[in-house]
Image (cartoon, rainbow, N blue to C red):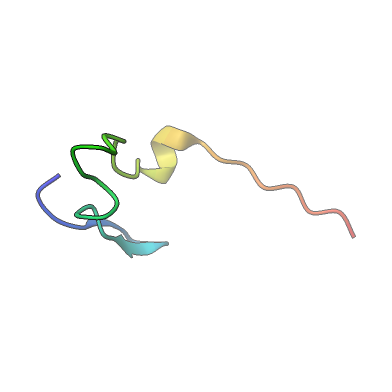
Amino acid sequence: WAGPACYSELGCFPTDYPWTAFLRPFPGPQAPEKVNTTFFFST
């Protein structure tokens, strides 16, 4: 990642230290379309 990951509905997420570092090699946030998250509300 070269900079923050920005998504129109969610805003921007930092992708630099401490979120990504040599000892924490996790990938950056993925686009909502790729994750395909679904929310269910029960009232």
